[in-house]
Image 1 (spheres, one colour):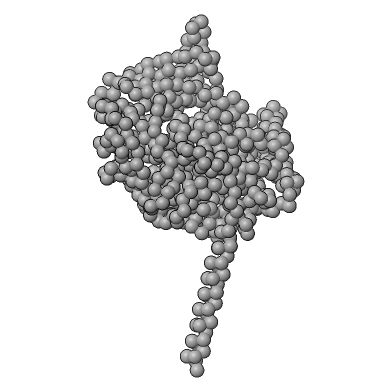
Image 2: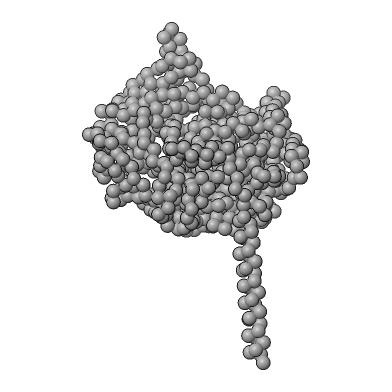
Length: 621
């Protein structure tokens, strides 16, 4: 009898488990149902399908900081696992046109025609980003392998290309391994986790260069001086002093100034430049209001590249006994917004580079002077547009490691579970790759004046030894500021007292030792009819009935929490977020960027009040 009862019990339990699994599967299916929405640039791209050559997507020169006269874009139609795909869009994106399923293994191929080969020239093959592991072949020869998913890489294919038709094969593997940086991607997307991307998701291009060529630039500037270091490839030079570098720069009055130096490094004292009339030049600084960029051409040997730089400093110093963030020696309030860098039709990539510029201008119109680029590294054009328009950038490192909602979000949000981070995430290979990726990110973005700060860890995601990581990052680049642990799990060393205040009050010490930064806040949700993505799910930090209620809550946040904190040591506020993203409907703009939910004039008034509060604190003494 007992055996029969036990059998019935286990049958019932198995049935219940099956039913529960079925409900979960059904809920995921329902949650995944979404609308087909497009940005204006996405509509333009799809409309061009009717025109020959419509597939010329993202065909501008991909590297604004190191431009050559010509290049050959390899974006356009490729084959992915035997089906057509429009590169550089990831296969999960609507704009890619890919009709297959993006699995763990992705095999890309395309042919290109090489004109008659020039003697003494090298042929370089560039990739903006491939997620997560990529191996590249040309004409059956392996060029190399790259791991990561967010940073550019280059292979020299000189030895293997030939006049006429050549074939490129890219074999990518993307298992969303937490050993590698993965950002906000998740296989079962939902809530604050989004649709994953795989394979090629930035531009692919090639260029011919001299046999010995400029492979990189390192530009370091302050308010008066600029140092330019040139990296070369192609052969070893026994005596670097046999080389000569030439820099021709355009001054702000339209005149040109040229300087030469032996070796691979040159220091230019802008305030020491003697003009034609005998007077000394007065350098023009890069600021948020007047972001002046100095254009220049750098020549070494047979190679030359066009670039630019901005003169500016960012630092933390005490002003009237309170630590402040200073831009060019003057206190600045970091009026920012969280920028995820997601798009409804291209996911990780907008339909056109200019969409990044529009995001920058949209936020400038709302009175913002900073974008916190949230755990994603963008194509270089994004940083160029920030340089061009005077938008400060706080760049997040891309997280790796597993995530626990209870450990990493729920308990810390309630004020519990503050702990040391030395013993967290002991996996040696994951730690080593995070460090390498962090250092490569800092080197990659070093030349952009817009990048004033880095977030090393966000809300404990993959966090380990944050003090040591802070020291390591600062040793590599001490011209930027570092938020070692954004939100919680803070240790000792960081340039900010960084707090997320969705469900807690802002805490400013009576005598702050660091500038206090509200690195995330707000996130009030409002779903706009015909402009939201997910049909049956919404996510945010407090739902609003309409735009009026949203405006009231935003205004109350700034007036009751942010403004009073400025005299006490608050240096900035980063609102969540620039636009809606999938389930999240808490953006200033809708996911398709077609509707602004807040009044720009009212937002500019709020920003003006914040700046006045900062200036008033300095005047009042």
